[in-house]
Amino acid sequence: MKSDIDEFNWHKIDAAAAEKLSTLINSPGVVYPIDNTLLPEKIKKMTGVSSYYATGYSDVQAHSSMGLVAGELVVARQDSSLIKNYNYVFGVSSDSNVYFSGPYKGFGHHASSEQTVEVNSLFGQTPYGKNHF
Image 1: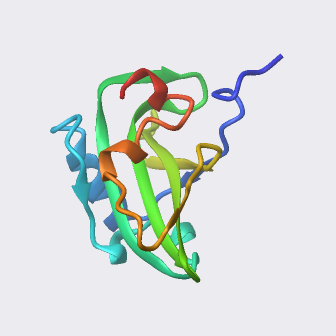
Image 2: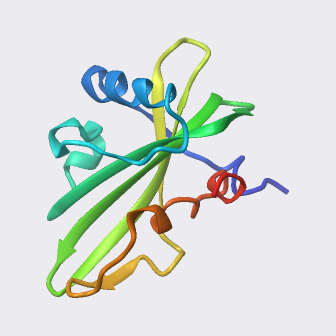
């Protein structure tokens, strides 16, 4: 039986977003706000995106079909009176391209728009992230 990690569906990230994410690997564990214009193209289609954050893992992990899983993304979007947070992982393949997988949202990812949520608490909710946060 395959684990959640084996079931990842990877999507190639466009050059501008990949370049930004690749720099995060040099400062693992630090959460960076990123301009929404640098979202991977497939995620840009999401309506109501209000914030985008990323962090690199302090200990990158090998993945059989990906290469190295290097960090996480969190994308927050406004939906009526709710903020919905979505987690993704990103990695670098053996062909040096950057890919992402997700969203992972089974962690109670909805919050009231009046509720204050610590951004760092949104990370570590993916099958890989549980080992890093």
